[in-house]
Length: 260
Image (cartoon, rainbow, N blue to C red; front, side):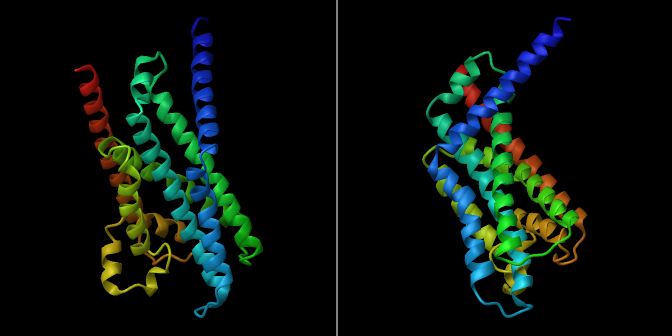
């Protein structure tokens, strides 16, 4: 009988933490505009406005719907966790959280819930733009499959963002993430179809997490390169595990500096 109020209180803590985290991020134009607007603007420019040769605008509009969606979710996850946690570490907010009676995982769960919601908002806008301006016509089940695949992509890149947050300073996290994310996105075929990239980049792409993520998204549309999905899932699972391990080491290192 006593556990029920405690359980409700715990869920209330998680819910309130997630609510205020979302409201905080919504008040940050430096995060909201790149996260929500940039993928839509890029898709409108390159997936809709430009004339296309190979296969007509329908094919390229459908392809970029998956890859720009993957790029958008990747950025939401990387910068939501990476920059957010790094900045709050620098401000001493993490120390305050650890000293409070709040469950430690509530802080990270709130950030994960926030980037999931931002990812859903961004992909919904992208889907609406693709279906209207892009002329993309897909069965309802395919839309859902693509949405589910894109949403699951928050996990590996949020984990990597968290690792960067604990190993990079608050002033360098943005630069580090940009240096990593932009070239890897280009080399993975997120901006230009992978089939159009030079052979050497296609070989390098096999070692890039965004490539495996975008190929899973393209697979939902039947536009992937035909590789086994187990390869992509296994690579991303290993990438997630390694990122979480690095984040945990960094977290423990921070605790040691503070309380050691």
